[in-house]
Length: 305
Image (cartoon, rainbow, N blue to C red; front, side, top):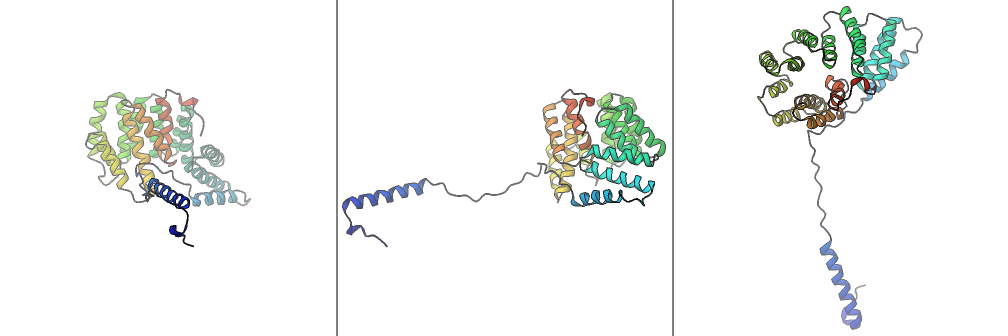
């Protein structure tokens, strides 16, 4: 019911007026509600989620391994396939167990030796890593990724001259691949930066210009800026999976670039590499080693993943 002020006492009138004034003051002081706008930074890594297909595949393989009718050859392949899946989601200890089981059943599996070698490298067991990569190459002399991974082990083990030889072998198998030029550059730069730059410039002419990583090589040669490289990484991708993969790569190579001049920035970039969760990429695999080398830690002291 509406109360008319003419029908009430002066005291009541004063109380009502005071209440009205206080209410108006409260309304005036109340901040206006603004509509929030979502703005995402395309250069901020969004961790890749584990695919449900991978989880189902791991469960299915585990079920098949319990069946008595499978042959040793089939079981070896199943252990290897499950190991690859474990590795792709960062479960490297489980992956290593499966690769070892596969090799016990089928000792001539070059792929499994290559993975075992990678895992030895990650914890600084270089002698065991070389034995595994040598076994892979003895079984498959043209297995170019075994040359890459052995070269990386040699590089971390300060055997640069030998690493250059392996990276050259890896590069020659596919000279149009920019990643091969970059890893060869890293080994060359440990011996002579000017000579490494000169060889990288020569190798650039053989690259596939449509390949994303050609822009990383252009950055290393001073032809585009760091911001231009980052902008390219964020604008060339239309889905989160691909964006995470590109960021995993670009942050790793930017971190390598900054290691000497700005180790703090390099460490920040390596953390962003790990934040992508793209476990199967070589850049993600070795980012933690690079981080701990910056911190002055020996790889053999690192925790096993």
